[in-house]
Structures are given as C-alpha cells and as structure tokens.
Length: 285
Picture (cartoon, helix red, strand yellow):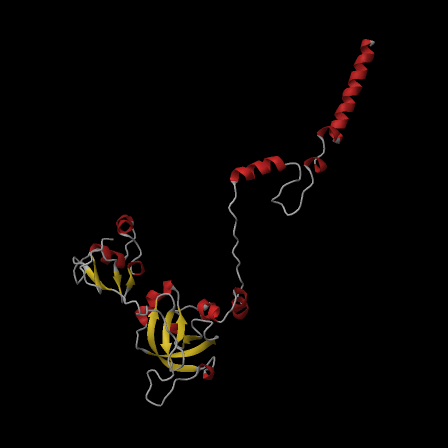
C-alpha cells in the first residue's frame, strides 16, 4: 500500500484504501466471490453482480482517504461490558449488582453494540452488559435485523465468574425469530480473560480447573543434528541399542530365527541328504 504523509501529525492519506464499510462490514462479508469468479461462474448472485458490475450511488472513490492517528493514550475500540455503578442513570440510582441477577429471569434492555466476532451487546441496567453470542458467519444477518439503540426483551441464560470471563453475563432473545439468527446458547464457549487470571497469580492449570476445560499442553521438539541421528539409527539398528526408544529392545538375532534353523529349512536339508545317499547307492559309491 502506498502511504503519503502530508506532514500532519494527526492524519495520514491512504491512496489505496481497503474496501470497508463501517455499517456493512468488510468486503468479504458482503459479497461471496471475487471479480474473476463472478465473471467465470454460471451462477448469478445479485449482490456480487451489483458490486462488481454496476456503479455505486456515490460513484467510485477516486480520492485518497484520510485516516486519523490514534493517540498513544487513546483506548482501542474493544468490547467493554463493565459499567461504573451510576453510569447512564439518574443521580442517586445505581445499577443492578451482578449478584442480584438470576438465570432464567427476563429483562428489558437496550442494544449498545453488535460486535463482529462476539455478538449483540445488551445493557439491561446491570453492573455488566450481557452478550447474545453469534458467530462471524451469523453476524451479517444479525446486523440486518438488530439495530443499536433498539429495546429488546432478553433472558439471562448463564452467569459466569466476573473477571475470569470476558462476558460474565450471557443472554438470549425472548423472540424466537431473533434468537434463531444467533448461536444456540448451550453451544457458546465464553472466552477467558487470561490477563486477569495472570494478575491473580493463577497458573494455566488453575484456569483449566476454574473453567472446567481441558488443558492442552503443547509439545516441543528440540533441534537435532540430522546427520548424526541418521548415523545413530544405522549403527543401532538390529542391536537393540536405539536411544530414541523408551526401553532397550532385544537384539535382532534374539527374536528373528535363522532361516536355516526353521522347520522348512531342516526338512529340505534332510531330503537333500537322503537324495545324496540314494544317488551314492545307485552309483556304487
């Protein structure tokens, strides 16, 4: 990408901006095929055709896009489910404590965000916003039917330990048509905040025990000299002295019989001796 700095400390001009629409999401979420695929494929998709073969209403972009530099102390835009006790409420009112919520209870809430990799964030007036999870593939349908600022009726599906889980409050829509667009509640695996757990002095084993999940221990292989390994294999083969085995194996000759000692070999040798003796008798030797 060609980047030209105009000398402004707060902005930068990008002559070749990526195709992205903040409301519709990235390009790969709006169309299914590349230009070449759309040309060669016999299947007609209206969204692909409209994008690749028609002029948009606002016309094609021909000017560089100017983007804003994020200040060093500026927080990135990431999901923040926790609220201060009085945030967004009249003076004197406080938010519902997490411990006062109940699984299975229905609440009215307002959609505050629809996150691409998480789901629908809903403020029910509690200490934490709840999440109605959806996958990346379901996100496109979700943003078409759910608007930020919309009031919805939700049910508390699962409450988890605050701090340990990024979304301690899991919700689900009471309206079946909306919930069908989302991930089935029992199939959702809530992400763990490992940074919080490390601050508490927890080990990986502690996190696995607290979450009831299996700890996957990675396997590492030390670098080795391939030439020396090949020589060791050649030298050790058949002797039982093979260092890569857990236990020393028996030498090759201890468990593989000599072909001459096999019953078939003995029988052939005996018949050969009998044939030689018969021939000697005939010849009078």
